Length: 187
Image (tube, rainbow, N blue to C red):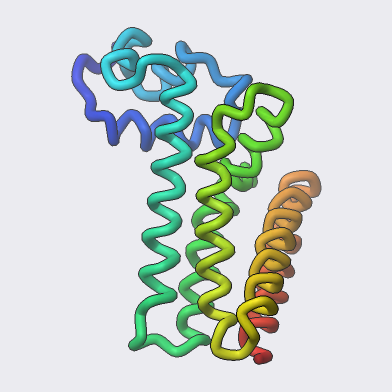
């Protein structure tokens, strides 16, 4: 029996894993409502349509990732090694979840042929990710080098996530994280 009352945050928390696993196009509002144990009509109390729901999901994921990434990066009591261990844990939590990968990259690939309605949210996520890594690189590299290396790291990580999903093997993301750590520590 569906719940009659739930918060917007509860809805988003239950929708995110479904969308991460199934994708946007393969997830109907009925399936999402069932996962949330609510009536389909209850979604429209919080969201005008599926597009608005997806935008909120992407914004929520980005907010969570950005908050946790920068909380580590800006913590001056941690050494670079300690920061990298915490970032590895965050990456594991965000991207190794049931081999479903990165919801941002998944959404970008799935909707690239459509009107780019989610493009801004996805760009914000990747820009935050790149900027965070760039901060870690700045003490040892020029501004231009640190930006280029940070972009390369995010590309490598996303490729590792893709191969992890294709081969069902975490070694690809683990290898990308190890390469990232070596570059940051090399300086």
